[in-house]
Amino acid sequence: MANEYADLATLKLSLGVEPGDITRDTLLNKALTAASRSIDASTGRRFYLDATGTARTYNPNGRVVCDEAGVRLLVDDIGTAAGLVVETGSAGAFTAVTDYETTPDNALVRGRPVTGLLRTAVGWGAGATRVRITARWGWPVVPTEVEQATVIQASRLYKRKDSPEGVTGSAEWGVVRLSRRDPDVWALIEHFVLPGFG
Image (tube, rainbow, N blue to C red; front, side):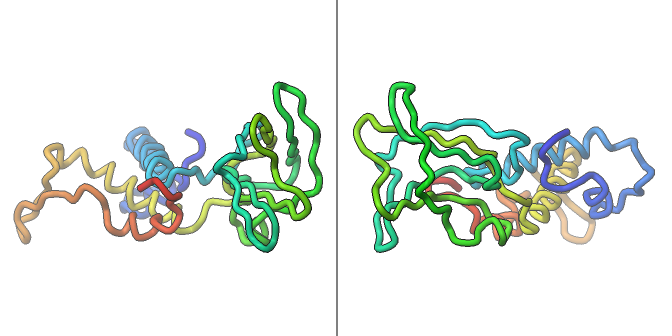
């Protein structure tokens, strides 16, 4: 499995499964993958970092914010400045741009992604102009809250096999219907949700 936000050992510890017990590893790994991808879908972003850079092209129309600092182009999460290439142009003819700053300030140092590129002297163009960015997309590190939400959600998914109709029960409390959204998972991830998601 790849790009899960928590590891198998942590999930086993949370469920009280002995580290040497490998009989449930397949189901536990599937739960980790499903929990990680559901967090991606709920937040509208992903918290792992691409291994290599890829190019994405943006139309500046509707993606720029003007303020006293300059003109900021809003971009997908960029997890490292290493290998970052920014170009403007159209119809396959692009020119490198170097007069920009990454925003928010100190994002990468704080383990957060770059989400904007600021130009103070000129804007990002309009009409047929496009901005092509080659970067390693994602987050520099998985936030602790996302890791914990993944463990909770994966535990819930793993245990779901014992409540196929969406109900669970005990002798002490009786039958209980499972809620659609785990409130603890949501509390951990809601501040990462991009506008328009969740």
